[in-house]
Image (cartoon, rainbow, N blue to C red; front, side, top):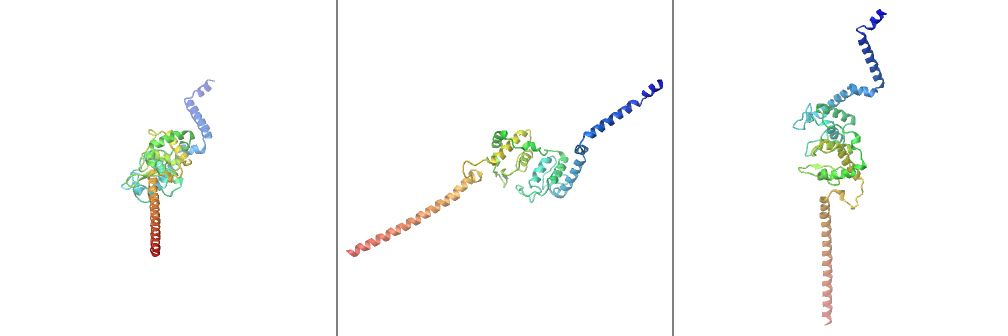
Length: 284
């Protein structure tokens, strides 16, 4: 008994028990951990995604934005711009740009969403920044439409017009129409402030308020125009131009018609008067 007791109190006994306990806990954890979670926790897929994004960046973006995203005379620095900025610019076709100008035009998208995600992951690795929003943040919520209308009119309508049809800015720039823009792009634009637009971080416009604005914009697209033909709802400039051109032309044509008929009537009256005078003179 004394010998057995001595073996039980061996100095390595505690260490062996600890190792066995850790092994048991690790086995149980591995059994309940899904393969996807295991892959994400290892960071292998993220590293591969960043590597793929870097390869894409070097072939399509580095000539303007620099080898490490530091920027150049042709393009701004991307360090700290974040994944949301990349997703917005590339998924709307604005980047890569076809040519420099006052404002980069929207065009056909050149990359798949997977490639866009890879480039976004690489740019994000350079210095962080706004992340791509979760879909729940830009889903339309009917209960937020009224608040969104107030926020849109006080914050966005100055450039995008009250109807979201867009508007002209200075030096050849413009605020694009929001009538077809998808909610994700609107949310990312508010986060990142692309081109001439100021950015509105969550400290300025909260995520709930952003969702409210998006809910209003999307809901407004389906509303009937009770005022009749709205000329695209472009505002008083287009309506004034319509009245000036079409209305003025109509008035000119009407004036010509009146003048022509007045001249013809006058000529007929003169002819009748002469004929009457000649008949009267012959009788005398």
